[in-house]
Image (cartoon, rainbow, N blue to C red; front, top):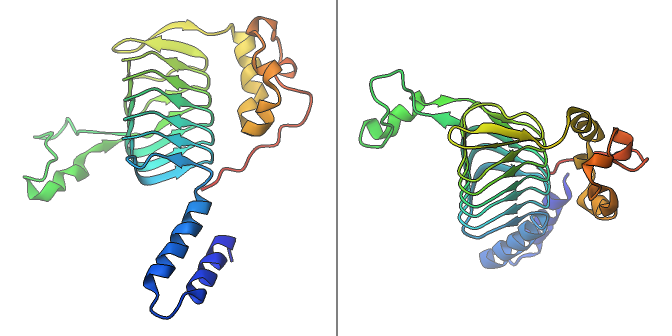
Length: 240
C-alpha cells in the first residue's frame, strides 16, 4: 500500500467519531506533503495534468487536457496549455502568456461554433486533435503560440510572439508569424554531442554541482564526453 494512503488511513482512524473537520485538516496536511515537489500558484488551473517534480506553474496558468510536464520545468504567468495530448520535457521554461494547443476547430463541417447555444456544446466533439510534443530545455518567449501537431526539438528557442505551425528541429531558433528558422544555435556536431549527453536526465541537485560544464562555451565541445562528467547518467524517475 502506498505510504500516502497508509498515512491517510491513520489520519482518518485517529480522528474523533464525527470529527469531519479534523479529518479534512489531516487529509489537507498529507496532500500538502505529497505536493511539496511542485510549486503551483493558487490562481493556476490544472485539469488532467501531471507534473514531473519540482515544476513551477505560475499565476493564472491554465493546463487542461492530457498534459504531462517534465521535471523542473517552469510554466509562465497566464500560460494556456489546452486540448488533447501535450507533452513537455524536463528543464523547459515558458515566458508569460504562452499558448500551446492540441485541439482546433473542425474547418470541414458547416460551422466552427462549439459554444453552448447549440445542443449545450455538443459540437465540441467535432473538434480535431493532434498531439503536441515539446522536447527538453526548450525556451518559449512571451506570447508565442504553438499549434496542434507540432513537435519542438530539445534545446530549441521560440521567439516572443511567434506562431509555430510546423516542427522545430533541436537547437534551432525560430521567430515570426508563421515562425521561421532564424539560425541554428550550434553546428551539427555540437548539437549531436548535446543530444547524446542527455544531461537533462540528471537531477537538479546533481546539475547544481556541475555548473562548470553547464557554462562551458559550446565552441569547446566536440563530443558527448566533453559535455558531461565521466560518470554514468542515472535517469530520474518522473513523479506522477
